[in-house]
Amino acid sequence: MRATPFDWIDAQAERRRAEGLLRTLRPRPADSPLLDLAGNDYLGLTRHPRVTAAAADAALRWGGGATGSRLVTGTTELHTELETELAAFCGFESALVLSSGYTANLAALTALAPTGSRIVSDAGNHASLIDGCRLARGTTDVVAHAAPDAVRKVLASGSGPALVVTDSVFSVDGDAAPLPELAAVCRAAGAALLVDDAHGLGVLGTGGRGAPHAAGLAGTPDTVATVTLSKSLGSQGGAVLGPARVIEHLVNAARTFIFDTGLAPAAVGAALAALRVLHAEPDRPARVRAVATRLYGLLTDAGLTAARPDAAVVSVRAPSPGAALSWAADCRTAGLAVGCFRPPSVPDGISRLRLTARADLTDAQVREAVRVVVDRAPADARH
Image (tube, rainbow, N blue to C red; front, side):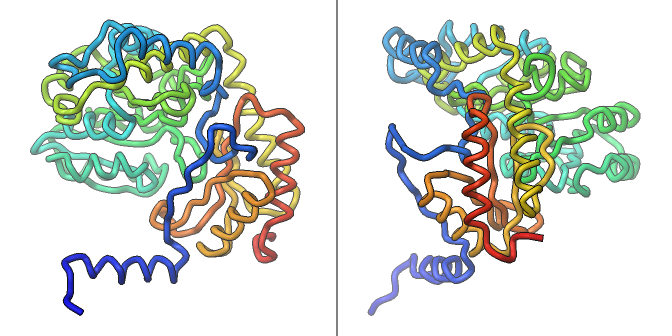
């Protein structure tokens, strides 16, 4: 049989299958019967009546799409309204909304790390930050996870503009970055700090204003934050928050902003409504943190190895990629959806189940979720 240009794909697929790393899409129905601890709807706002009504109203008023890039026709009055309220809520001078949290990170890194600059990136950073470092024209040094001293040493070894990049809450184990210490290191070296607060907004800080706000960094001239609208705000999209001159620079220099179609009005309307619900109901962040702590306590009491959560993410170690895949599948069969993280999604190569706490989970649902995870655990998952 004659070879075709994509025959090499078959060998890679077979390797993934043999190593338990094959990924497949699993469409879910709108009325899924599963108890969901796999998604990122931390505050339980995705189906909130005010949020869904706002999405529908925005689509009816503005149409199904933004119709163009933000600099052409893709900026509606609704986009500006969201940017103004989001910046004020999080304590920053200005904000810029993009089509996803991923493109927001790419925009910030590529625009703020030009040729001749240096990037210092945490080894546990999200893939979008890693890709942003790869696309930026500055040189990148990857340092040990959550290690301000390592950052200090790298910054001291060179000169010129520098940008330190970190998640606020790391998506694999749910641990928080030492932001005050990192900020002190940056200021001593004259470097800027870029914080991806995807897992902090709506969960950490006063009323859910995020990790930079909690660390006293919001609104400072040397700190920029990125957020996603698809987790705590239950919608879609992302944003960059920072000094007004930084945001103006991104409008003129960030390619994933300039050349991308603007975020759909329905997503903008939903995010704005969710932000207003969060502002009106400031107890939701405390509830999601309490749920995460309860999950962790019950799982570890049962003999499983789980990471202590600093926000909403609770990860449970699995013996192998194949064991993690089977464990997650067994949980689904028992009515529980959990995340399954395997290489290359985990930087340390250790596979995990990932459970995401939600503010709207009842105590009974938390106990049921733990029961299913524990009952379906591989024998060698317990310590």
